[in-house]
Length: 156
Figure 1 (tube, rainbow, N blue to C red):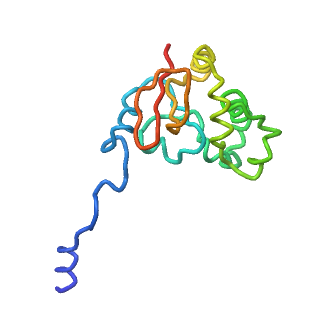
Figure 2 (figure 1 turned 90 degrees about the horizontal axis):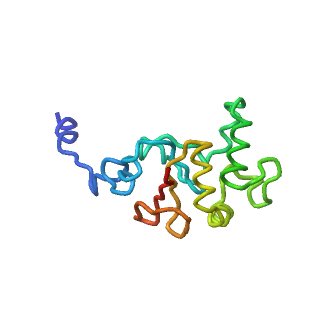
């Protein structure tokens, strides 16, 4: 009886929004609102697909998962090269023992992409939006910004 009383009176201390996603966070809701195309993220944003319920082009923070689905290797290599500007077979020294696209290399590459280049990537990969840290400046319209993140849209 005492145990039942304790369980019934137990309450979680602290905010109920420990897990932020599209239902309780305006930034992730903005990402989720555009249902066209795929989302691509800069560097490593773990669980972006879970937070937004949006399909992602590639999990740029878990490239090591390719060993579980080797058939995806050629497509992964192509995406890493064309979208992130990294030679998959001869990556920079700082990422050779990592499975994450580094923000610094990614930021430099994407800052050089023109709006036309982004539209080409949209046509090739069906990517319609990009999630970056807020210190990225892309040649694209910014849709939302919050908590150190930015959402950019690739026009048709």
